[in-house]
Length: 423
Ligand code: GLN
Image (tube, rainbow, N blue to C red; front, side, top):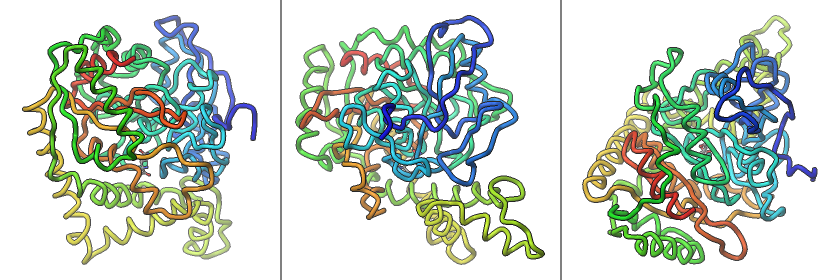
């Protein structure tokens, strides 16, 4: 495979519009984030030649902060996957172990940072897609609280779950990039005042003394023992630095994965309806029959995207809505309540980011359910719209292991502080 690990779908050089805190920094931007005049494919043959007419808000902010964008990063098609193997442009290699996946869906973003092809990167996280590749590639990744970062110009997969967020070699750089992209945006009504002038980078001071860290017991128990060993060492390290460690059980958590996939697929089936070859996407070559033309256009989707559109459409169809979608929403509300209760007992919650070590390239695509299961530790956070960071905890079998810290809504300062104690 190529010398650059196939981290980029498109290499480019987008100049800054002014000087700022990121002057001299190079940034990789995930290829589902719109860049004016530079093609934005979502890792899909459907958008192979799509060139957005405008910049996403986060891209505008990067440029205004002095950053140079060096590439559009590879990703699972429309963000649907956890290994970057569903990309129509081929998988990204893990720079720490070339026969292994880089994780996903923001695999290109994390690999670009791990390989030094970009100083910083933006990813998106719908159910773990920033934290997963950060963990697998041995870098830091942060999924912000829902509403902290504008989604304007992000090509949607599942709107109620996803956020754009930073990936970087260290916690401090991750927080500094968050400082640039966070804050309210007139173009996205879900954005919140909390991100304005929040000074996240200053919170990376390692001052974990006096904090209570709640270990999410069932998420630890579901992980590979080699990962648990590394995780326990990091937790002991936090304790040695003055943190109090308690154990926490979330009763709802066993339902999170099923609820996530019903909700994500339902939203995806609706969002992806616009790719019909007329509004967006490759043409189905109309020959007098629109149905036929639409159907032909949609053949450009890959297997995993088709599977999710079919399942999501089914879950939302009349007669089944209450059985699946409504139940999933009830489970989501339960997960949120459970997290609220947990934050009455702890300042931050900890678990292994991923329950498995990075799989070998080619090993995961055969069994979709198996692939969905590797998201067990990350999706509860998206259901509850909370912030979480993955920070390198050490290595097992020579492969990177990530530790996840979850905070209360808009509690980014806390997770940045605790994570920086491990940096
Ligand atoms: N692996 C999860 C999924 O396929 C998460 C993806 C993401 O966060 N974009 O839905």
